[in-house]
Image 1: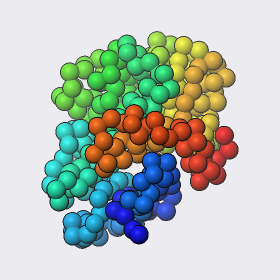
Image 2: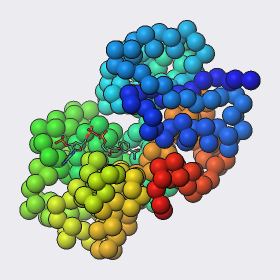
Image 3: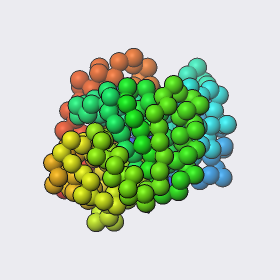
Image 4: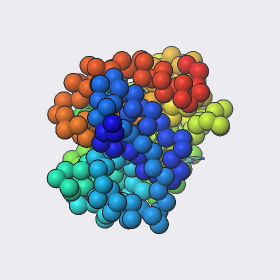
Amino acid sequence: MMGRILGVIGDPIEHSLSPKLHNWVLQQLELNEDYEYRPFRVSSTALAAFLQEVREKELHGLNVTIPHKESIIPLLDEIDPMADRLGAVNTIVRIDNKLKGYNTDGLGFLRAACTNKISLKNARVVMLGAGGSAKAVAFALTGAGIAQLSLYNRSPDRAIELRAQLLSKTNFSAIDVHRLSDRECLCADLSQATLLINTTPIGMFPHADKSPLPLPEALHEGLTVYDLVYNPSETSLMREAHHRGARVFNGLDMLIYQGLESLRLWLGENDLSKIERKISLPELREVLYEVLGVAV
Ligand SMILES: NC(=O)c1ccc[n+]([C@@H]2O[C@H](COP(=O)([O-])OP(=O)(O)OC[C@H]3O[C@@H](n4cnc5c(N)ncnc54)[C@H](OP(=O)(O)O)[C@@H]3O)[C@@H](O)[C@H]2O)c1
């Protein structure tokens, strides 16, 4: 018996962890007879036709990944306000035959922070990078009671644009922007910072020896370091930070929680904790590390 279809669309899609994540969670929830989650490789030119097919078939919900997160928006019937603000959709829910787009990346970050007791209230945050994930995390942070957000990016224009969007779409204004190469500012900001977030891909497998931070000596024990990279499970940045007494976390929990938030939407569940209670987070991490071939 085949249940309702869920899935992820992207190009490429072979390396996505989402099928393993969702099918494992559906099994834990005893919903694996009702739903099956599949990867769909869909090229940019085939996107509109695929969505038309989705409308005609029993496809209940989708995750959306690179390169479709932005280009899919005009093809949907409704966009949730958060996805609209970010200009990017990572989750589609079919509601009464209409397709509605959401973005769960920011919530995924907040849930991961909460689970790991990372304090955001009054936090002074230094963020490395200003791309898609930085945007989702930055919007989430502006509503979480932080005191300061310092954006560092290789190309200053992207960070300036992100600051402008945050200023125009939120009530949070304590935002400064710098070049990633501005060591003096970075050193000063890090000495005051309580949270350092890496949203660049630097340090990701197979370049695990690289760190996005040009000055590791500025890391200190008053810092929590959150690296969005999760392969390897301990990045070079995390290792340097741990060595200097900081608390460190990789991005796997954010990945898990953005996925659980998508599932919550597909199941029409109001409260994520009802899903969380039925799964073991350590076991799920282990399952995903096994797929990645990463030692923990
Ligand atoms: N844990 C999770 O759930 C999760 C979720 C989303 C993403 N991620 C990870 O986060 C990382 C970024 O993803 P994204 O979607 O935000 O990518 P993106 O939109 O392409 O942005 C990449 C950012 O990294 C910077 N960057 C890239 N290469 C660099 C280099 N060699 N030196 C300095 N800066 C560099 C870019 O700077 P410029 O603007 O100067 O190009 C940009 O700010 C990826 O590793 C992705 O796997 C994790």
